[in-house]
Image (cartoon, rainbow, N blue to C red; front, side):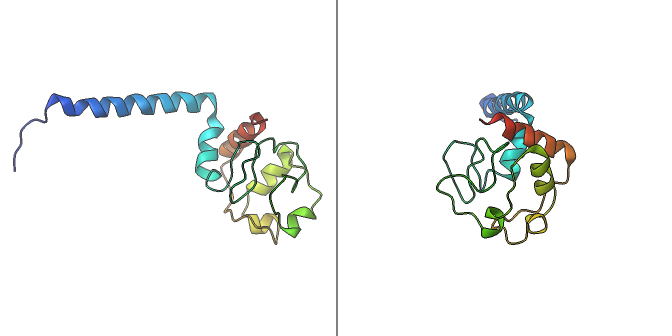
Length: 129
């Protein structure tokens, strides 16, 4: 086993990684909900207009009637709610497991209990218009 010092050139990748992390943190400060969206929603949803994934696009979701994104097949349960995705409805729906929030929904989600993260997420979604 050698205890030689690592050559100086190996510190450059660490420095570059630190710079990228700092840039990401700075970008996250401008949009604190972006990180929450990536961690909680991005696997199934997009915020790009017209880009449905496993779930519908969340572009313009705040203020939109539920189950109205073109090209997405919603559950009968959601189509029958008559909901509008205002901030109060989003908060109520996302703060608990989806099957508790609406029996019969297609969405599988455990709920977001952290109120600050939920506020940040809803603020981020509101900005996507």
